[in-house]
Image (cartoon, rainbow, N blue to C red; front, side, top):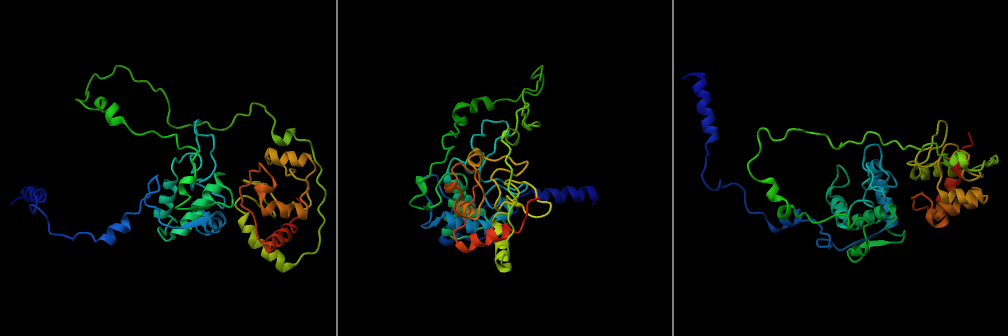
Length: 338
């Protein structure tokens, strides 16, 4: 038999069904096995387990389980997705689609976190932990207050901003007839024109000569911070606390402005005077009133930023322990102004 004939016979055998009817493989799935897969949650709350979690607990879990990829404040790290922000951007050519700006149903967030996160260790979180993490994500998007507790009972109380931004897919009823029929294979269209582009290449804001906040703000001379003796153990403790801040702020030699300004020399400094950083209007208004980052002012701000300074862009929930406030103040005081 020639090699060609052998190959032909082999292909014929492979193409022929070996068994007609059921193959006799496997067994029916057990109810508990089906239940393990049937974990989806619907927009109306169907499928939610009993449980609850608050924002502050969620912040701690998020910092441990999610911050490496999504940032301490859900602002995203590198190419990992941003989970917060983007409000009012959906009409732009380069919208920022986050939980707060785009996702229409809270169930999508809960179901995805429960099913797929944290990365590399999916479904390792308890129901209470998922509730807490989702509560913190909502807080990071300014959708709930810091004392909010998310549970199977309060789940439907949350209103997602883009809930009305989606419509039912009715294309089967309205457009299906346009898709079927004999396809055109030749002389289908005499002219083809590009009417729009899928990729936005030029998204750099054009300020058009508009002065920046730094250029228009009245110059404020920052007083030289007074260096005082500090407790070495307290400073070491403050360095650990600063890890909660390092996603947005830098200190030390070579520090640069990031999401937040450089904090070198911040203790005792006039507010809003870090060169090259665009502050919020709320902070600049307070700066114009003479706000100084004294120890007392810094403690009050870090304890609850958004309560102490209405309108601040700082989404950090705050430090609740006096020991942490003492430690971070001591740590920051060791970095003089550049």
